[in-house]
Length: 71
Image 1 (cartoon, helix red, strand yellow):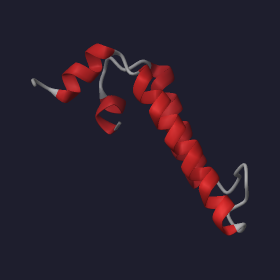
Image 2 (cartoon, one colour):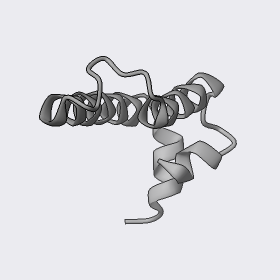
Image 3 (cartoon, one colour):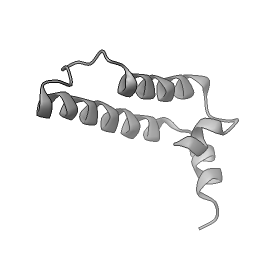
């Protein structure tokens, strides 16, 4: 994801979403508060996993090809 973030051809909206995911992770405001032990951490894990999966799908194919290199 970092290579896609710094790539010039990655759209700005994807980069902003990536920053938003990191901000959500470090933010004290969550869907379920972290002091509720298992549920607090689980919602972070689910939100970040789904967001990264969706962002991975949204990265343009030409950016993925340049990042992955020759096969």
